[in-house]
Picture (cartoon, rainbow, N blue to C red):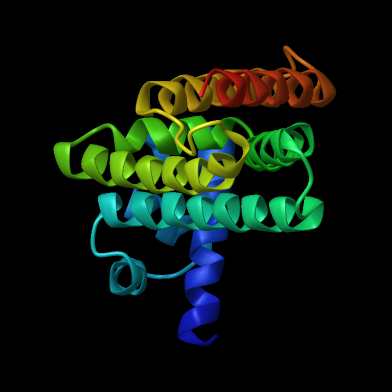
Length: 187
């Protein structure tokens, strides 16, 4: 197996361990066991559990960012309602696709100052991406930081509820879209 293929396998198995047993069960030793390989092979790819968790979140973050870009490109120069819907659909779909395991990985990132700092930087980069997309739809070209915090907090909560089955995906799309439109109208 190539190095890239092994890394892909280990990341897929790590997501599987979190999905089946929770984030606390994810250790490099457990990952080696599930993969049927020795621990040194896993340590060669991820020197620490924190490094593995960061790699998992980086993967999710890249998926989410690419999905947002693709969704917004698809609506092109559409109005705020179309743009809001594109943001909502891409956000909700990414969370639902990863399911409950995303919450476990995100919680694991809060386990240390270094990991929490990484998550804050990743969240800020996504907020900045949304801010750039939404700016042309605002009166003054700016979406405030408090508005972005509220928008993304709502998107997280609503998407998590859809992932858990408390809301339908359609309800989540509608609610996140409404929040985005509201933020733009207030800006």
